[in-house]
Length: 212
Image 1 (cartoon, rainbow, N blue to C red):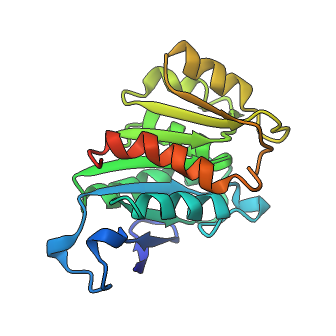
Image 2: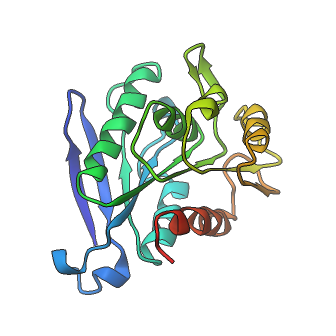
């Protein structure tokens, strides 16, 4: 079951909440059967047609909801050079935290950078996974430096043939912090490997959210 959400705040941030199938098999949205874990999913660059329906986000959501966690996929508000988008991510996490006991954060490409930056800015999450993350967006939007301020487990997943995102410094920093890194022989878009990538992300996030 899915539900459309308007995330509160000063910007137009809309989201889709995908419900865990095992907790809502008949689509009744019964509060008594809801999971207490959710993952907030950040889309890729909005100026390059990034949106919450991105195939990587949907694949991750499918993997999570099949195994007992909900997933909130959201769209950023009007383009704001990364700053408003980071604020949108923080607000989406805040919305999730008001309704769930445990919150994970995931992002792809530009969204991977947003996930890392939001976690470094104090987003109340239990774990972060960044897929093909962008690195430094601006002097004060540096996903590499963000690791210095992230207090929760972080996973970085990347494709060895990715020639679009500047992922190398992010992977290097993750390894310096002894955080898990997963490598795929793939391009930036993980063509044909979406299900495997989604399984790797779910395998990391779910245990950190107490979902086995």
